[in-house]
Image 1 (cartoon, rainbow, N blue to C red):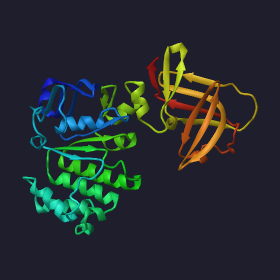
Image 2 (image 1 turned 45 degrees about the horizontal axis):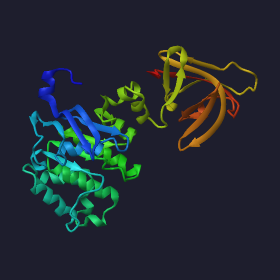
Image 3 (image 1 turned 60 degrees about the vertical axis):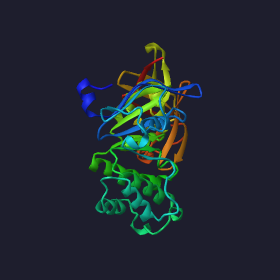
Length: 348
């Protein structure tokens, strides 16, 4: 996974070696080898029940592996208690002291840090929009304010490793997006190592330096987000990224299946004639071309979703600017020609 042994020894903030963990006799991880570089924003993506939260708990010392070891900053930490590991953890629900004001919650976080300063607190309060709620209790805050408070408390600890377990999962996107941007900007400015768990592939691709997909008791792939999206290592990985999900079509002459992402199609032509036409499904290494008949159209938020019939296949196509694709009126029954570059090829 890592380029050289020297790089592994000097630049890994977290390393799991041959890690094994089970829960009530059911394996969660088996012989897991995995690492996160210092100063990177590393996102962990996986289906529900794949072990994302367990992974963070093993790193934080809240659970212990059955076998294998946890290394932090080049030192084995498997037997360390949580408070000795130099980690700050933010969960799905904000862990705050409800009887204290926001200001006192932050002061308490400072007291637990050996490096915190009033200047840092003021900077974080301003950046994360908490200045107007310092005298309020956590129970008086909105969901977004409460999660920002939990994140600021974690950042005030100035621990070198920040673990985040779907901290924004319960918030609507209008709240999640600005908090994500703030967190990412802070992480880049300070060089904090962050491991961020999510089930949202869009979120994972937006904020990550690298992305790990876990499932089947192991890490299925680790790479830059666009590499995982464009060149997934397996069908399971491909299906976790992209909305709508990838569509698979068998290509018998290649003994393969080709994965087509609905949002990646490009229009070549649209013909509104009802005359006979030749259906085409042309699958080459670097592109797929289809000619088929439009059988349904519907608006989904800002995009249009088409279904195109090509032989026995019904292919989903998603457009952001469908109204500009053809000068002629487009309707059910129209013949369309489309191409997609760099499809996903996997052996059957």
